[in-house]
Image 1: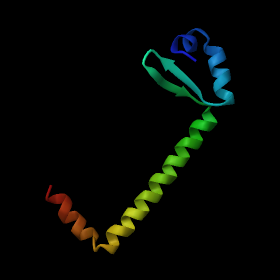
Image 2: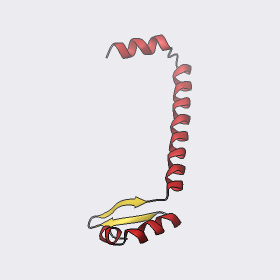
Image 3: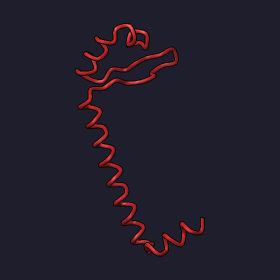
Length: 79
């Protein structure tokens, strides 16, 4: 759907987004994607989980490398 169509046919745009992601195209290509609230929440949950797992992995690696809370404080206060 073009950006102009999304503006002029907004009700249809919303209906389409309830069925699946709708790409919005501008003159220079893709300018956005409209998704249903359920899809949006699923994406947010996916990335929140991914961030939590990344932080856990990073903390584990830092601990294995000998980084302690005290050493971290020293590093951060030296900035």
